[in-house]
Length: 228
Image 1 (cartoon, rainbow, N blue to C red):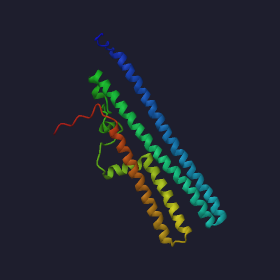
Image 2: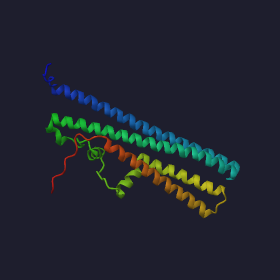
Image 3: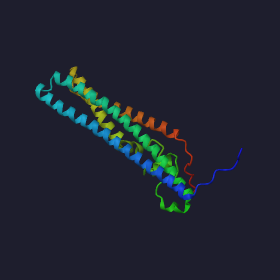
Image 4: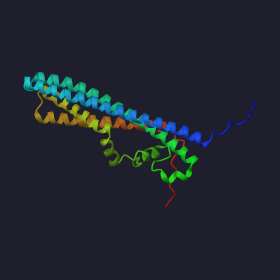
């Protein structure tokens, strides 16, 4: 049985293979973004169409019981569609995180072949969470501070979650109005449903991403910074 080692590939061939994989990941990230925007546009189209339909019903029924029944049904459809859309956006964000990790690994391979190019890279060559966040242009903050909360609200799942929570609040308020609740109770029901829906979606999305992150085994972790 031969024990000879396989021949070492020349650097040019290795760089060509790495570059091909890099372009493949870039194309995959583009498809991920394209699906994210398509999902958001589909939900907003359904939402705007439902609002226009409810406006027509309101003109005919003068905000009576028929309007409340139709509004609760249509907004429930919008609400369920929104929950599914937010969930899918979170899954796409996790996929994008995985592609970023892959690109960081390729960048690490580039620097292994040509370490003199390290000053020319502004993104990270490390595939742990800190390295991925650095490539995405985010500060590696692991604690649940106000900064991470505000960042969550400006992402696609975050801002869409606010809209979905508002739809949930409207459903609760309409239900209270349908049962003859006083005005202050209708407002409280809407506000409570909005807050609960938003908090539940934020918690579920955060736990989902945190569970996914550690499952990508880091092969090239970010080295600790030397003490100053």
